[in-house]
Image 1 (tube, helix red, strand yellow):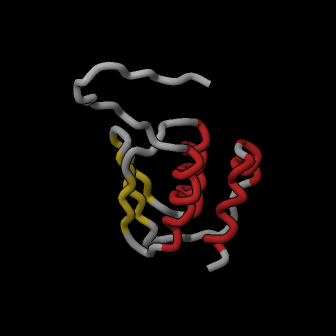
Image 2: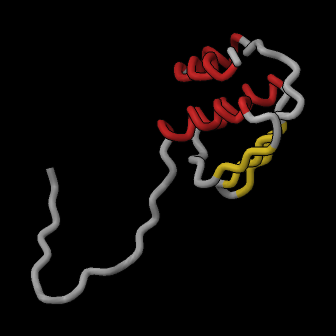
Length: 103
């Protein structure tokens, strides 16, 4: 385990960027179908699993716009409650969609 040892009498200050978490983002993305309307998400990581979730949302009838980590999901017109098998197979965590789809 690494550690930082800070010596001296000066104040420690600075800035750092904290990237979005896949494990936090996926359930939140799934929950967007519970909101019949517009949902805005920020700091969503651009990784395979989040992209697959967006593809699933699109197949269900949602409109998804992405721009530099900002995601806008419009779930006003959900037309289906079936997730295509090929998308389900691409990510194990797609099972988190089940709870939201049972609404």
